[in-house]
Image (tube, rainbow, N blue to C red; front, top):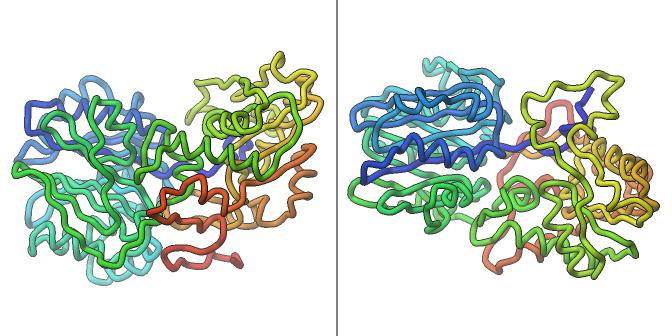
Length: 466
């Protein structure tokens, strides 16, 4: 039975790297950078540090605060560090699959952190096994690592170039050699990766909020199909794929990224506010208060309230301590589980017509319980507005989405969804209005889970008819 308190698309992973030209405590800065990216993965965490001769690593299961102690950080000394927080979209939750991965090559040790998912992982794994490679993890990140290691005799950059040419899918890579920090983004730019600077040190990471967290400055995003090499000589760029079109995952803006991040020139918070404004223009309704589902529905609720003139107020109090280790409720407690995490603020909804804004609906179980809790708190009407289009298809690029049979939007009409979650009215943001809210006039987006059109050809789900 599916756990109702996790009725969301699950995060992918977060990567971070820093190259120091000074005497920076790179392990500690990586710790705090990844702490800012904890929302992208809560299953495991790790840091690998190069001292110019060897790469030392510590990784463990759990949140960063569980995986690292002060003593662990003190053992990691050097001038290059890369780190990773993981949510397993591919591979089991076990320490072997935690990243970074470290491998010995003809050029010495290299370490790699990967965010994304390969759609040709099975065939590449079979080819490598046929040639004698023995896999030690069930993560497709090891495929990239093994391809790099096999080509290392040609030099690290040519090895990386050859590896990323062989794989298909989404990847944002941060790689450490003994003396270089390297970042790679897939040719479609599906997963984000950006460059920052802290004094004379350079940073590579999944979101700009991690650069802000350590007091750095965002320089730019890594371009689709680009390899960025950072060394004592400075920073240089190689474009390894000529046919690139930036198609960042739209759900980075809808749900995954922190609102204080800027991805490919688009401020996440402002994009969500614009989505709320577009949602009102598309689907107005008379009501007394607008509320948002914490956390990613709040910015869109602010936008809806701003455009409509209807007051915004806090609708739910979030328990900040319900996280990865929360014990799933028993069957008889399942319907009460949402109130453990989100509880209505009764004075703000009692006797009122409520517009409830959420970023998305996946299965619909949480939405149903939230609506029921608002009615118990005294809301006279509940109108649901969703700040994204209907999720109808699975994702193959690093997001843990259910099969189509489990997606409420793939199998039900709008009226059937309205009845299923017991609201007075419901509407989703249209794809055109989503694109309008994200528009900077200069890029595209991956909308595969929304319209079934993917930037990279994908396998058919096992046992599923797309």
